[in-house]
Length: 208
Length: 208
DNA sequence: TAGATTGTTAATCGATTAACAATC
DNA sequence: TAGATTGTTAATCGATTAACAATC
Image 1 (cartoon, each protein chain N blue to C red):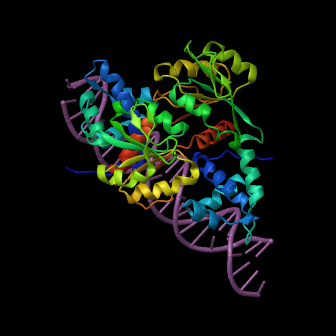
Image 2 (image 1 turned 90 degrees about the vertical axis):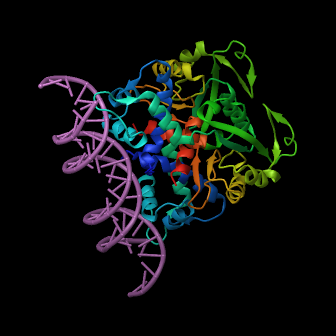
Image 3 (image 1 turned 30 degrees about the horizontal axis):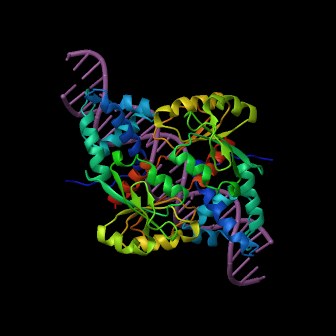
């Protein structure tokens, strides 16, 4: 089996395809064309065709892409058909909301454990989770071979937590703080600082 | 005064510069070079120079950029020196976390009002805010000339809320749902669906 | 067969990087 | 003056779009 590396630009669009395919999966259409998808998602027609060729690679002229096949290819690509365990470090306002939010499971992700450094929080329950001490973070990650983590601690502690996670084997971090995390090259970081998003939104508006 | 339009790629980096300049502003250095910034942010040297030229446009050879000037130029660019009022539509788990999160004010944004359609929530207090009925959304936006909104409702209602906001004059939307919002061209939408972010993170990891 | 749709090759566009001239 | 640093022009790179051949 040949694994191609997927261009960054395509990675940004995969969730779009995934969400769309899951939505139409209920309606019983067996095949779908790139033209239809491109219209629904507001993307270029050829762009979708190229993306789907990278993602699935078996469209049929005149017929299109088999929905069920596309779906399974997407799932394989995203999480290799197994649920991915994630941990959340920092259960302040945002961290707690993430814990309570239930939408991850159906996308193939499972919150396995949550951590905090606040003694008043450690041991307390949030949803079905008991807050674990950040002192146990490294051991836990190694023991359970955790690959992905969400950092929602105070900005000042973000880099320290990040270093800890990486040295414990974590390969991908979703960073909710506004700290620019310094990492080695084989670790992926995605930043979702909300204040930054608001700034970019405001810039886009002023830019029109 | 000449207003240049700022390339999309630069807009994505402006919050980076903003956060960095605000961080070093405390330490008393009057000027800073693009070389230093590029190292700290892990960006190309020339890239930073080009960005700052677009953003501020008055670096001085041998000296660099005046920190205070850079800061005020960034603020002007982002929010025109006035606090931007935003509203939050949908105070479920994530919406509520956003309301409680205090970090917006210092970045120049103010949560002005929060809305929900759930009768059990309307009238209740979250932080200092009383949840307003979504029935009042349109009138409120028009009355207060609201430009930016956060949508954190159930995915199924996102498009409806979006249409309502746009027809009420809103120009920018931060979308926390996984619904792909259809809008006219003069409205900006930024998507921050967290499950999508996890998918992209997983893809990046598998792609290495 | 003809038409619809895919996938590929070439052209265009935008963003980044390299080279270098200008200048405090 | 010499060195450090900016800003600009040219080259490169990657992503998107256009044109078109292949095929069910």
